[in-house]
Length: 133
Image (cartoon, rainbow, N blue to C red; front, side, top):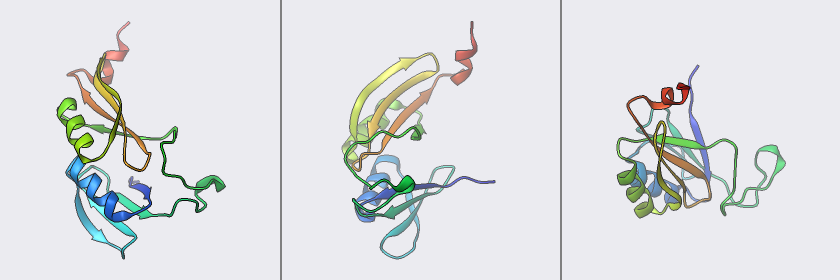
């Protein structure tokens, strides 16, 4: 099995610029103007142009203001503060500044399309720190 990431955006050009600037991803392949592959993470990212108001999964209409979903990206970085600065400079919205947690540091953001994501810097023990009684 393998994993890939699909992200709906209203415009692939804007999405491409954001994800390249925020995370250093590179363009792998273009499948026309509305479908682009980005590489640089362990799983490829596919940006899919889908207009706001069109029917998405579950029959709900797509919208690109800030929304909540139970499934989101956690991007593991070496320096969460530097990664936050880079993402915000690229157009992300900082929703919760970086804070210390037992497993490292975490910040909560949203991309320009309303998709939430976290930047996560693990400590030496990572999630194993949560196993301590």
